[in-house]
Length: 547
Image (cartoon, rainbow, N blue to C red; front, side, top):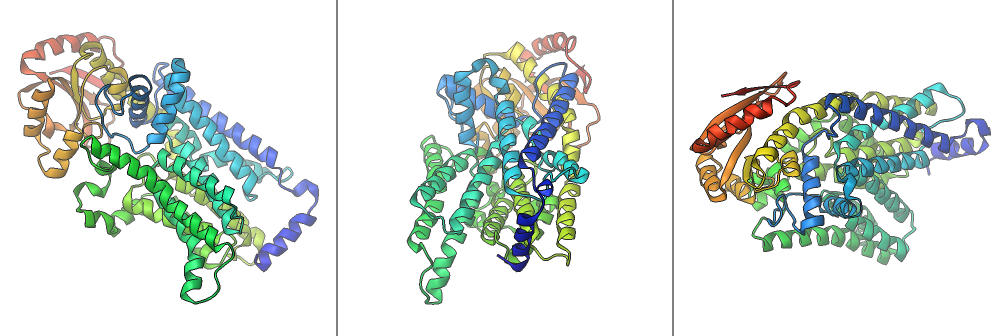
């Protein structure tokens, strides 16, 4: 412990009781603030969606569909009876599927319930393990900071995303706390076993946990390697450190290898479709996939200024030798792994676990760092930085109901149309979450997450209308619903345009309208169906017309 931290500890122990941290009040206040923010978001969302539960992104319904198929059909994929490696979050799919079996009546609400509970867990960790953003006495600014903390961590939006990111984040926090204890010398066999089990579960929840496992392994084995290189005696518990290092490698490898072998056995790529399609692995050779792409890394890192600030803080913390230096190193390795081999963004969710963990580390390290001569000023400065920098997070929280309303007007209503008139038939679409959740029948995914044939076409250079025409004939596609102009080039030959839903206030030039197509012979029937549907649909955010 540094001299500054020792002085800080003595000051804390001698401080009057009324200025000590009130952890219970901190936790209760933060949870109350989270509840208010979340209820406001969902309340506004329900007003905008005419009372329909709608998550912010379509991907939530991909996992809901997969969970339902696992639970009730024994199928891993988007369509009962058809295997597709459509998710890099197998643990989430299995967990939600298990809950669906237990409480099928609230199946669509399960992600909301689980995420809300996970976010409460995150706030519990913050209340217990840091003292910067915490309630002391009746300090108004401290209370205000605690109230704002859920928004800083992006928790209300993570709940309404309906994805696995909140649960993943709380497990990552527990992992890092376990790592901290092991680095302090608490390397019992039971703790190592628990650490391995946590890594298994967390990797199954999101495969990107492999980067964090790499970071943990590096900091656990580093003292042994350094001692061997310098020909010094091995550190205390060297054997247990080596075992913990092995566990850090074996646990995530076991999950990834299992998934890969199952995928390959079904004739698909080793990695899930979502990883292959969404990262630079799509067009790379094996060597190119392994060697870091610095441009890709910087594109990811620069997309989130808040993350850059936390990274900078972490680098300074490591340089100053703070007590959590080893945990910071593991976090930095995980962050650069995520930026290099995965991605950031997509509504701030991919880096959420890193940001939440980084903020906790920053708050815990701030009191012992030497940034200003007066310690109280540096703590206030760090708190202010963490509260003011996440402006994009605040904006996305405020805009969450609007994003959900867009989902309702576009993807949900598109799925309603296909479900009402094309149930039992194969449809082709590029946003497949709502479609597969509401529609029963075959699927061709133009974006490839749910169709390996299309993913193979992307990788091998025949991702075009000619290929899609052959695939549509083979799969007997009865209807196409695609976002124009992005996917116009994939519309099968011989299909006639039937209707266009123009998006009001479409800011992205790639997504201007949803266009519906049918085989030429069946176009009159689709026009009739569309006229009937348009008469009852909401046109708050789309303008529907028959072509």
